[in-house]
Image (cartoon, rainbow, N blue to C red; front, side, top):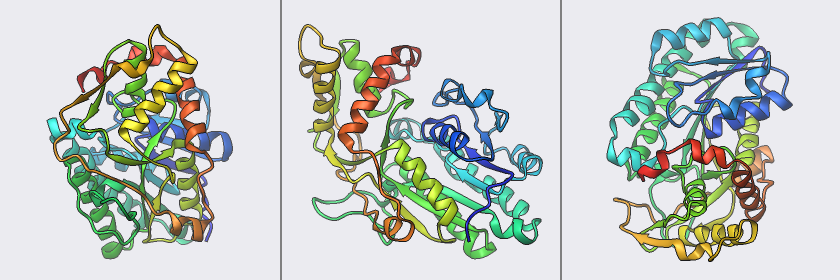
Length: 347
């Protein structure tokens, strides 16, 4: 049954990298109200929502997803037909240095939201109740690390290796339990590494761009041969729309970009693009430095997206070369964005 998204959809973490991309895309292409629930932490960006803030169909609610009263009140006031749960502490290095905020937001916050959503949903009736969806956006990191072959799919066993991935896995299990115990109509997605404009410069791609433009070293963990599957953020946003509109209740879907490369190869590609687009006195490649590996660093992630492709017809539309060039160009045109955020210096 296609989802009726009227009158509104709540995007938790809607001022974050992926959340703000969802907000921008859905306000411009779909005719319903978008409510952003966001604690407005260091990783949030009102600049990424600048156009949305001028849109009468957009509401920003600066609350903590762990605040049960505030969340319950927001649901009662906005009467959403769907909740897309993206709010999370997400940086692995930060989770290693200080896991407490990850436990609070990713586990307690998810529990709090599930309980508020359950109470709200149980009070609905008829078509409104049938149409309601709770979409939980998880990560491929909950499955741990792959060897040289194979890809993660919906049947992969859980084996989280970092505090971040462990808290996301806990959220996965809570969402599953609230569906099987209470009947809450949930859908869970597992995405690979996202990239694109507006990403906080603590993440690999914008951090390397920022460091390179400043003439600073480009730190590569270990031997740099860790492999990641890269997904352009706009393709992820489109996949989430497909899941809300046509995904099967109670199911999990893996979303991948279909492009694997090592971290070292990625940094070298970025150096090549910067040498072409913003040449310096010497090639940016000379800035690459190998540093001590991250504790518990997963070796390889890769996603098998055949389920979402077969059931919903979703396919990534952005080739990695195209998406990476577009991303670098955006940061070159928005260097004030990089200069205005200094958290990347801590990692």
